[in-house]
Image (cartoon, rainbow, N blue to C red):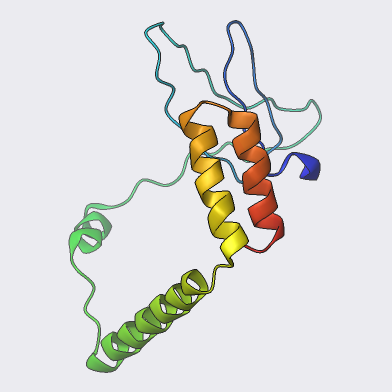
Length: 133
C-alpha cells in the first residue's frame, strides 16, 4: 500500500511479513545469535492466469557473446563519459546544497540507528524524503 512507503519492518519471533508486488523493497541483514529462517514465495490467486513457462536456455553462442566485452565506438564512449560527468556533477550539486536542517536530521537519524531506535530513524528518513532528499 502507498501509505507504507519508507517503512521498516524488524522481524520478530514467529512472525510473517507479506506484501503486494511489484514494489520497491530492500532486505537488510539481521544480526542475531539465534537462528533465523527466511521463506519467500508467491501466493497465486485462483482463476488468474500466470505465465509459468521457464525462460529459454541460452545457446552456447549467446553465452559466449555475453562474456565478451561490448565494443563501443569512440563516439559512444565519449557520449557515455559525458553522461557520467553530467550525472556526477548533478549529484555533487545536490549534495552540496543540502539545507542545514537536513544535515542535522541526518546526524539525528544516524544517532537513532546506532541506539536501535528504528521507528524514530524511519520517521526522520520520511521527513527527509518529504523534503525531496
